[in-house]
View (cartoon, rainbow, N blue to C red):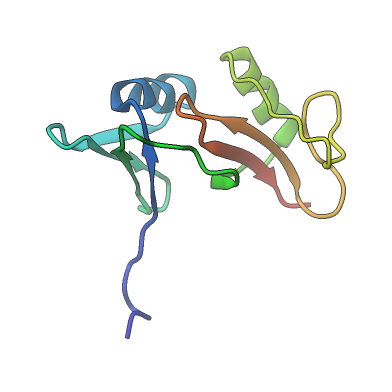
Length: 126
């Protein structure tokens, strides 16, 4: 029934203007405001697979990763993002190096948060 549907994902933020600044200025993504009145914006991602962000005043961030950014070189991506002010998350249960990159048991991955507290990652397949 839905096999040919071009599904897309979305997640909430508590401040659309702040989210737009972060995703555009810090991460360098293109965004499109879809509905200013109701607070809906699209992250225009590579491959024409937009992700919708929507304003939710009583928002509580998820405790899991909501968006992953595949990269060719995780060390370069982490260094570039850190230079733009991004702080990488540390998880006690994850074996992460000094940069915050987990290099064991799967792809190389480092987590960070957007201004609303949503968990994002840069990820490199090995």
